[in-house]
Amino acid sequence: MAKILIVDDDDTILLIFRTHLSKAGHLVETAVDGVNALEKIPSFKPDLILLDINMPRMSGFEVVKRLKENSETKDIPIFIMTSLKQDANIKKAYDLGINEYITKPINIEHLKLRIDKFLGNTCS
Image (tube, rainbow, N blue to C red; front, top):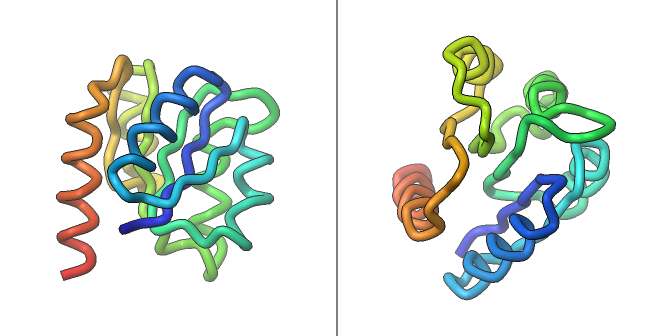
């Protein structure tokens, strides 16, 4: 399956998503904030990043911006997962180049279906 990096400062979300996505056959790594994510990405080389926006040290928006500016990481697909539902945040995220914007609370089965559909379409 895919290598997925989950970036969120909520330990419960990291545990639940890691467990469910690992059981679905994915190789999962986690990061507790944007700085931690940027440190892990070069060696882990994720096929997909699930990224929160509101985190300490570096926001998800800043992570997306840095990834898209780097030729080695600009093509990594990014799903934003956040409680921020405002149109301005959604527009900003898509303008930065994300692939999906999913609002919390997230149904894990729905998320798995979206991941499988997305990865199936990009790997075909």
